[in-house]
Image 1 (cartoon, protein in one colour):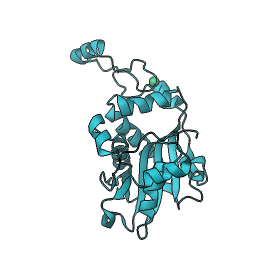
Image 2: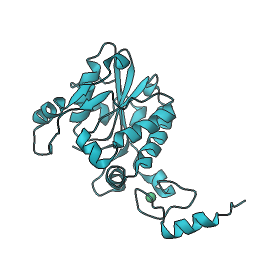
Image 3: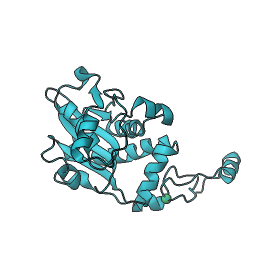
Image 4: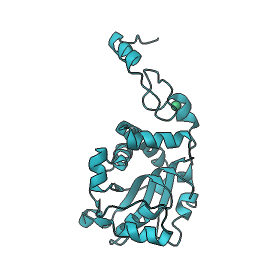
Length: 233
Ligand SMILES: [Zn+2]
């Protein structure tokens, strides 16, 4: 039986249409964040089913990674880019939580990601966080936390110095630049844990590597990583 649409909700939808974050089409009242087409057709990597995958390979010889995976492939000008833009620059925080819920449910089925103790988001520099009002990785971490039934620690890592645009620097310079930028805030809460480090997008992996090196420097830490998207370098 079809549920009647409440009058007020219908009127609100008429003047403030709810749009899909990835393709911009009108959403049905029963849909949130993503339309059905995007839910099924956005390019999922399925990396979490394979220990040796392109995400994990980027860290070979760089740091000891237990498991690594991304939800989507990023393509320039594609729907996943629009999705990330909405999350970072259009205030769509609920999108991060929605994707975290969705991906967390998938990771919970993967033996590679079994036994996660806690989730740690890559921090934004405080100045950037003030400008944006939130850290998009926090939103993703919160959604993952709900789906995996594990806590997330928003301030386990802090960002110290403001990193300038990284595009013209070599990988070594980039790494040195970001390494200087992070510090551990609550090492006692992290030691001996299986930590899932999360970020919105993985490109060169320099940021994740810098954070990961700090975490794996603690006693008995097992490190895994997850991002919403993975881009070609
Ligand atoms: Zn869509």
